[in-house]
Amino acid sequence: MALSSSTLCHQNLTKPYYISFHKQPHILSHLQFQTPPKTLTLDPKFTITGGCKLSGHVPISGSKNSALSILAATLCCSGTSKLHGVPNLSDTRTMASILRSLGAEIEACNGEMWINADGVGSVEPCPEDIGKIRGGFFVIGPLLARFGEAVVALPGGCDIGTRPVDLYIRGLRALGAIVELGDGKVRAQAANGRGLVGGRFRLDHPSVGATETLMMAACMADGVTVLSNVAKEPEVIDLARFLTGSGACVEGAGSDTLYIKGKNQLHGSECIVPPDRIEAGTFMLAAAITRSSISMSPVIPSHVACLIDKLLAAGCKITCAHDTLEVSAVPDDVGDNLQGFDVRTCPFPGFPTDLQPQTMVLLTTCNGSSIVEETVFENRMGHVRELQKLGARIQVCGSTAVICGKEKGSALLSSQLVAKDLRGGVSLVLAGLAAEGVTEISGIAHIDRGYENLDAKLRLLGADIKRLIPLTSPL
Ligand code: UD1
Image 1 (spheres, rainbow, N blue to C red):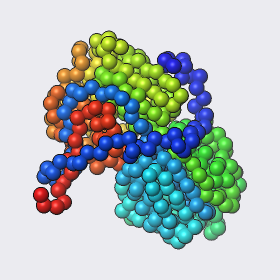
Image 2: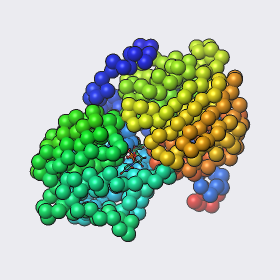
Image 3: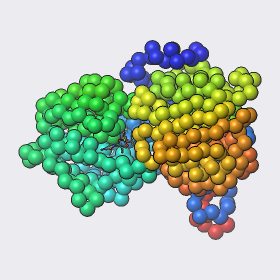
Image 4: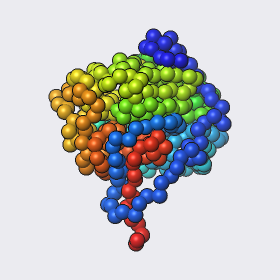
């Protein structure tokens, strides 16, 4: 089916995502893994020879952010929870390590994970691990709900703004917790010495993490909780679906108000982590940036509706059949060049901030000037300086960037770049695919936090990308 914006408007954004297990892509069996060359480097690096056209099909992994919140939620459950399609990423491994530091038992194999939190005997997860990822902080909700107490270090994650936790703290207080912040840790305790109680809380801003954390806490609070101005991201719906499958009573996920009736106990359940909309969006943009045609699955089109609209406006051809999306920007299909467009990032269903850097790369290759306005995080322009090293003409003023496009295709030139955060880092990879010559990118641990086998998947599509791994043994 060829897509238009009106097609997407009619899609039910909260429709459950069901696929049978055997349809999940077995990524390891699809991909050719490259033996890294024995080259002496201090950090792992990517080297990319630009100019290759991409073609073929790429499997999309399970959603990182859904997996992280669902993993946190397994702490609410007695018995074993089984997750399918958990992406093998440094962030999900860190989350598993956080759960283990509390006493949970976890087994993982080929994207499946079994979590049993019956043996949890600590309410203070490993602070070093919490400091590595933003999602680690979410465990404060389940710990407080189940054990009446939690001591959680302040979270890490990408350096893209101040990223406070005030909404989490005020929300937990509204559920009857005494919460104090000191020495880099948040200490929370149920005020009545027993457990949380239902309450009402309106978030000043629809924070995804605060919504998810408060939802988990409210599922085991005594009474009814009403959370308003909550996040509507698909990951919030995924979490609500897991919690409901585990015996919780959550209504309103996907709207701006959540109604939650607390239960004494939740039980482990089985769930499939839906596909990662940001990974899908990144590959859609890779096709556009390289003026190529690729397909990908599984994708939930309504999750990437905003990007589809923008790519259609630019002149790309997009078709969709079941859960497969095909993006073409091949000149024979779409004409000589794509047209630039303006972007303003917003909470879902607006344009995702996690696709802003990658979109900016596309705009450097389009006709005309474009404006990108970042409204979610106050410091998410770190990739611009690196893109400028490639010759991109981008001017930043506060949280707004003006991008001068090229009249005909990309004229980005190669350089040595440093990835400083996850999405900014992957935008450099996309730029390297289009740049003339060999681009070298260090700091790729940031990219490995959120993209499963990125380089192997790009090679599968025909890109010339190599991962140089530091030598640990003599030649
Ligand atoms: C999640 C995603 C991240 C995505 C972001 C926005 C995970 C693990 N990460 O991050 O990939 O970029 O949603 O879609 O799911 N804020 C406050 N006070 C708070 C909490 C948030 O002021 O207590 C502000 C933040 O500083 C930011 C804005 O709210 O400016 C949005 O942040 P939020 O939605 O909370 O993002 P995360 O949940 O951290």
